[in-house]
Image (cartoon, rainbow over all chains, first blue to last red; front, side, top):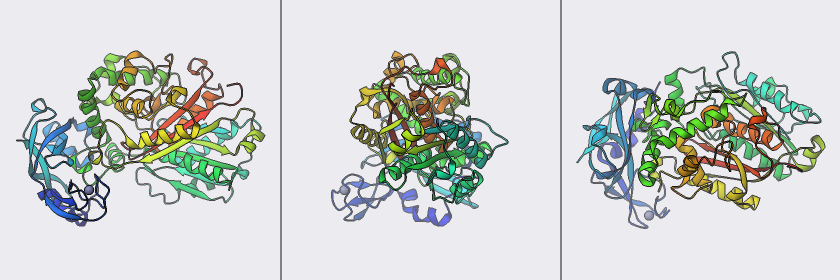
Length: 138
Length: 386
Ligand SMILES: [Zn+2]
């Protein structure tokens, strides 16, 4: 049993997961990610234009998930690797995202270090491999 | 005017209807001049039906089992704050004037689940699409908060473990707590890692349990008891579900809003609070709560732990029950169980004399859903002579 995100539900967010596609507020011009019904900065509901994020950002906070702390759909990953790292990344355009950090060890990390988005395997559900964004040190 | 609770813990022979029935019996016994359950006019039930029991109408299930009349029953679900919101639903029903005697219950059956299923259910109260798919459960989310808090405010790792030591010490004295044993700081620091910097001793256990409170208008309450406990103020709030969508990861806006509204309604401030039950699902959550509730300035909450201000002997005892950490956290029951603890304390009826708070002052309860997607704060006052 794992987190349930059906294939159609996942498909609706493929633009975000593969390409970090955000939305620029027509009210204040700031970039929202992931998309929302109202701007998270100014509350405007006047609509948005598509905005491509650069994928560059900085570590805002991070943790290392031990096998005992991994949700079931990530238990295999945690068992194979011993643990994995999850961070909140502050993107260059402003929004924060939460994602795994790859190709690094915990002792390499510090708040403020620069990171870059990569597309990696997230997990498998309904027999379908799900890919999406993770980050590595820039 | 009445409150009851099952012991929290591992109850292999009890399901939710049996636990509800036991808590109801306990609550009815606490009503000094007795109450006929057939006089209850409505019931508000907080539960997640965790484990996918697929209980579409838990209120009808438990009310029918316990022999309540065919009253309206409401099911409220806001993750770990389900009980707190059930309480507020009951309170607002009384305040509306529609009813003068209602029942509020919270309950959860968690230990029937395999560990993987439990983590699934515990995790889906957060943001599934993005947070969860980064590989986080709530331990991971609170770990992100803890890590940033330590960096921003210079809190040492040991302070988190001191929260666990304090709450285990309180829980050891509470006959209805799940983990009734003290732990040493060395042990608390050496727990198996869960999500850095949090280890097993920074996390609340998985518990079964139910709690019931009976709410009445003042007139009705005085006809049933000479020692009513008064709800002086309450507030609640919400926030972006996903932690990364919020301005701050070290303070919960839902808690701040709930506390501001509760203090304003009661016409008091944090300095008037004599003791509190706060939502310590993880040790860092208790420290953040000190700040959101106004017990400490932003960034200074951890110093209350270092100073011992919130121990049983301190100037502001917090989680005399053991808190979620040691008393246990049967999700839907927690917000109602906090009211049960405060009810007993404010009547001088804590089960053991060594855990009874000294007289005078107000009590505060604080209950959050997940990592603060929702929050409830209540302020209580004891009756005459308190
Ligand atoms: Zn805007």
